[in-house]
Length: 229
Ligand code: MN
Image 1: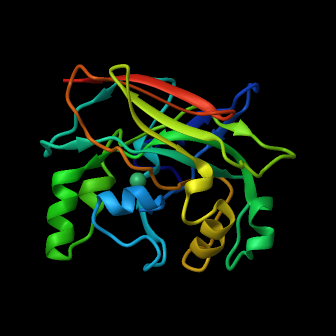
Image 2 (image 1 turned 45 degrees about the vertical axis):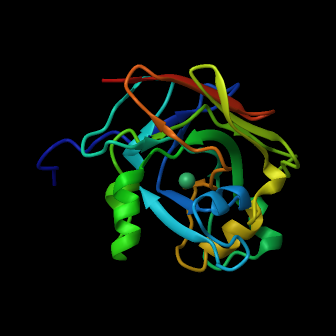
């Protein structure tokens, strides 16, 4: 048997300090996971369970390559996020076992067509075109965490054209990494190669072609790239 056309190469991400690469299986995302951002979007942080959505695996952008301003939006927003890279998975993973599934962490951007998302929310329709578009998930190299998997209060921050726009600590997340893995695994059988974007702090705003974004999580990684026309 042969393929009717050559299958695409798997999306892969460099690993810090290693010549090996991480093959991406699926990309899950958590909506509204920092109370300040939930408030700025008009919600109540303690009221609702985590919101999950997904992006295609090939929406990943690596190596600080520039991102082309996407079609069909006039309001493209950045969202800096901690990204969890899974080295193992399962269904109904307990919180106690959740961190055993973590291979490492990275910093990533959950690009959002905010105008389309707002329209989708108002009409009760899905978020796919607002979230799961080409080049919507730039990411740093993955830092493996062999022993220390608890991130504590590391600083997460994003600057637009050199101006600090988002700044928080990972301790401000409403749902912790273990809680997210446990909750997500009730809906999906998680696998090695899955990524989880864990939500963004307050300070989101729009970018235009020519803008430069820089984002980092202390001890994890950094990302630095341009938006092109
Ligand atoms: Mn997000």
